[in-house]
Image 1 (cartoon, one colour):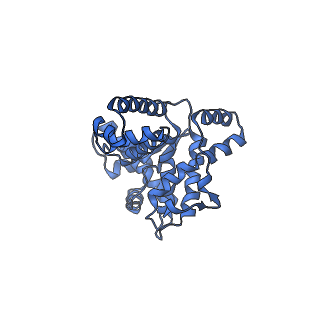
Image 2 (image 1 turned 180 degrees about the vertical axis):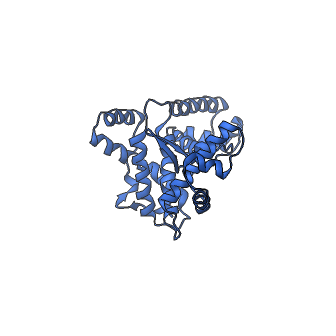
Image 3 (image 1 turned 90 degrees about the vertical axis):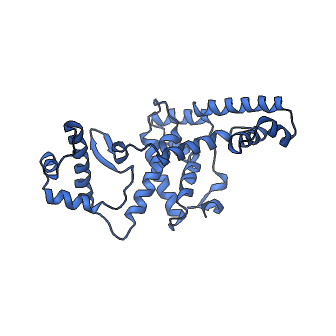
Length: 259
């Protein structure tokens, strides 16, 4: 199990640094100025995020060291592509990148592999199909897709059939001028479990900013569904104190999540 492993790829996970928001912001300013040492420090300061992600894949039977290394590749890609001017937390952007990198590795490690040329053909066909559907308000035929991208109908059918095995939502479909379109961009899913999981990680990180007493109150109130009176009785303080501590805890978490 990942949770019980202290050393991964020679890294003592019990001693990984935990960067404060101010430190992250300062490091990223240096990274954007081309500071390689700041980049290395930022990578090291976010390795805990990689560990959080690979826990999700503990049942994949893959070597934990391999998953950690692949996750680090995803982390580095996220750092190199993150736009700090966007109003989102780095972890919210990085987690899907890390997950996508690991899923690509797991898929490409299968005994049956799909060639890159077949994948490219399939992705072009999917992209063309979406464009034609938006333009004509109806699903296009293989013949229409073939005319759109200049590839034979037989090759398109073969390529689409070859990628019928599950593919990552973060697989690139089309790249133009540096802007990459991913599979997830073409899919609408109101029950997106990845998004829920990212929110869960952000919430967990926010709760780490609380004192031990505040953490206990938030857990009892919002995860166990207890009333303020029940919480007061359980931890031996007044309801007024519970209310004050709860408000302070929620304010701390809100400030962290919107920073």
